Amino acid sequence: MQTILLVDDDPLCIKLISPLLTNAGYSLLTAENAKDAQQLLEQNTDQIAVVLLDWEMPVMNGIELLKWIREQSKFETIQVIMQTGMDQPENIKEGIDAGAYYYLTKPIKREVLLSTIHAAIVDHEHQKELLTKLKQAENSFRLLDEAVFHFHTVVEGEFLAVRIANICAVPEEAMYVSELLSNAVEHGNLGITYEEKTAMIENGTLQEEIEKRLVAEVYKDRRVKVSMKKEDGIINLVIEDEGNGFEFEKFLLFDDSRIFDNHGRGIAIVNSYLNMQYLDKGNKVMVKLTLKENAN
Image (cartoon, rainbow, N blue to C red; front, side, top):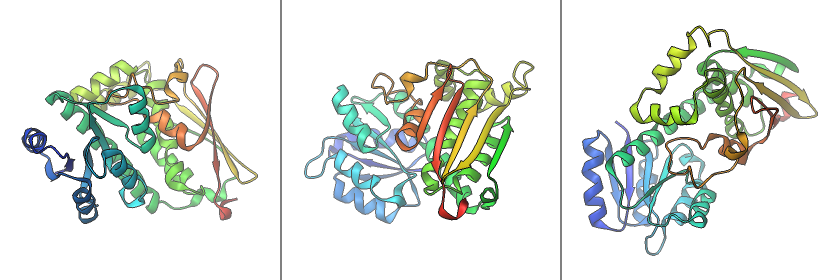
């Protein structure tokens, strides 16, 4: 059972939202101010998956609490959903800059609330799993100077991402390469569109559709190609899929027109952390990562 921390200075809001979350099967913690929320986060770091955070609170507001959360690595897998009545682009940008990638506008509809929380929990579990694999993985890629890999599934891409990240100066940031590898499979080779993924996440059929397309005649022989070369303390990666490409420009930055969608943040997050550049029609991306000192 996943734990959600609901932070809101309005007791009525807590009273209305609490049964929606508990009836959906979530464990719930509540706080009416940021100070109490900080204490609960400190006491339940390993249990809390998502913080549902009100923007407008006295003393310390939601953005200030969010910044406090993002400053501490022990909270790095906790996903924060901002709930607010302020939906202007400048407000959204402020929240994004502070590290909020999910938004809900008040009054909150039940279906949107549960869909957004589900998406945030999936991200939490995925990030936690990758970080665990990162800590457990052998650093065998330190022996490679140049290599070319071909893979078919998202799981194979994650396996490769963990090995690459393990020889980087900041492995936790380098792990964001896994987002590009997943996109190369899902959107590139399997042809899942943005709109299709939105609907699949909402109705819980994304993984089923991925498995179906992986064995479909039109997609089963497609592979993602990853070229890796070490040079002067840098790993140069080129990731190329066999799809038709996409309009990557609009996904490089957080777009306030998509901020309320249940996905679509991955590339912008990668772009904010890593040195990356899409090439050609968008089915090829180049990434530069800094090597660990002993990985040359």
